[in-house]
Length: 640
Image: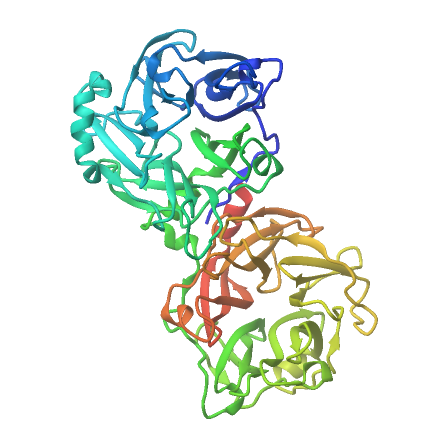
């Protein structure tokens, strides 16, 4: 689990129209690593159009300085075309300090109109970012995005590059060199190219994806961290999946960087902000540099091929989340006896499925109220309990809650009834919010209540249910906060794809109805939570704020996962931070295969001794539980 945050000052580097050479775009920038003061950055500068030239615009490499890492000044052109092999432009620099010199690798364009045979890697050297000491064409074949490892590996100079980027399939490949001059030795490169597959690494998740080297590798105690570009569905996909420009991370073996130790499961940055979605090329984020500042990793990237930006993430959280030896503690751990509840053919009301459980910790045991469904597809609520939160001690043979009102009675064949409960204790009353569905109209949220004493003693005197969300609008995944804020109660629910909120003046639901949708959380384009988000369990109060775990659905593969957000302690309509990656996702057979495959769907959670017990439905068929240290979640969310 980790949290990536785009800094508020973005975009940090913008075109200056009065500088014709960088008046159109300034993007794909790379900083010096280490503790250099000031910070040097190189970036791709795109000129204003010149209507008198055949090539209307040209790319050069600019240089800027910053004393604080935020404000970049003293901008100037550093690398401009001088040789025939770069006469049509110099693009996308990567800097690595080696000894007393800075090696600047960039894309050199020798053919116009641009074509793959004229797109190659070049290198320039400088000691002071004032004078280019020398420059050379590096690759004799199509390649881009080369970066130098900042120290020898097995005594050799080592580079990583993207080969055949314009004549796919692309290869991310490693080359080791005996001496500096080997960098521009054409014969040695051609010999290496003959065995390209031997030197390649492949982080693609699909044959339709495209990858390129992003930032120069960063050495960590766990391996080399490589931030790279991963474009999903770059090539036409038979399923017509959407093309997504994303930024991801790889962890490479410290002694043999051809070995991938770990990697992110999906993009950690996608185009979501206005400056990433609108520009010269819309909906693009492209990494080209990185820098460690204290405990944070700064990712330098281009936005919409127009401006330059920074995003930050805890270096430790990122590394440990993708390293297989440490990642387990950054995710929920399943109970080894899962599923804890199964359908029971002897009870017709729960013969088909038991799933999506609510939970509450009362009187020394965890009470589980779960959705049950018979073969007629009518949903009711069942009950079970556990003293240790993991193993079931008691399970009732009859449902504790069944459809009573007309709005939850089956009007035609199909699913209907009382679904997906969330239960909250306020003073001496337990409120249950659930989805009421009559198989015809859009689902609505209903509420029923019961005294704590009756609930504990299994006297099921539930109040008659009341609808609290408007008709004609699909509304689900609802709960109320267990305490008031300035004498008002905050209600969370989901309309369409977003988590919304409304304020109630009281708990009198004969009078209080939902009439607002204050957006709290929305899907993130291109991410694992890109289609819809919804509340899992009711929010958990902590000293840091309210911890809200949420479920979400991805676009391309319709997988239900779980993420985390931290909400303001005094006004939970304000989101403080949000996990970038999921902290729980389907892995086991009972989660990946069922009535609805690839689903983990929690509706309840309790905390004991700083451990969260998360109760969830697996594949809409069974009830399960998983645990995680709450401080691990809070520490990660707090870092952002």
